[in-house]
Image (tube, rainbow, N blue to C red):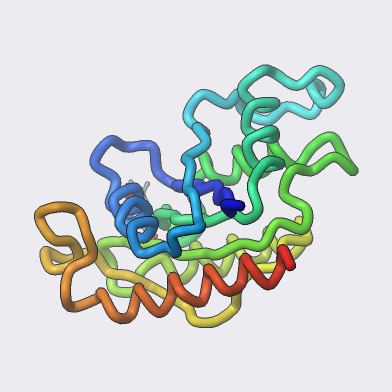
Length: 182
Ligand code: FNR
C-alpha cells in the first residue's frame, strides 16, 4: 500500500520557491509515495480558548496529518526563523494537549531562500519545535538551498546542478519514513 506524505509548505505566496521545491522534490519520490498538500492558509490564529471546539480548518488539517505516514516540511525563512503561518499551523494541529496530530510522524525538513544560508536558521528553529512534538526528524543529510536560475528546469523539475544532491536527500527521506512505519 502507498505511503501518504503531508507536505507542509512554509510560504503562502503564489510563486513561492518553497512550493516549487516541494513539487519538484515529490517528483523524485519513490513510486509508493503519495504526496498531498494540506492547506494552512485558512487556519485561524491559534487560540487556546478553542481547544474544546476546534474550528473546521483545524480539524481538517489534523485529519490530513493523522492519515499520513510522514510529514515533509518545506519552509521559507523569515527573519531568521520559521514563518508565522507555519508555526500557526503547527500550534493549531498540536492541540488539545495529548491530541497532537504530529506525534510520532517521521519528518523531513528542507527549505530554499534567496540568501546564502538557505533557510539554515529557520530549519534549526523548526527542528527545536519538532523535537518537542515527538516527531522523529531526519538529521542527515541536511539541505540548505539557495535559489538560483539553475535550481529548476523550465518544466519545474530539479535542475542538473542540484539533481543528484536532492535525489540523495529524497532517497534518505523515503528510507526514513519507511523505517519509522515498519
Ligand atoms: C525574507 N527572506 C529571508 N531570506 C533569508 O534567507 N533569511 C531570512 O531571514 C529572510 N527573512 C525574510 C523575511 C520576510 C518577512 C520576507 C518576506 C522574506 C527572503 C526569502 O528568502 C524570500 O522572500 C523567499 O522567496 C521566501 O520563500 P518563498 O516565499 O519564495 O517560498
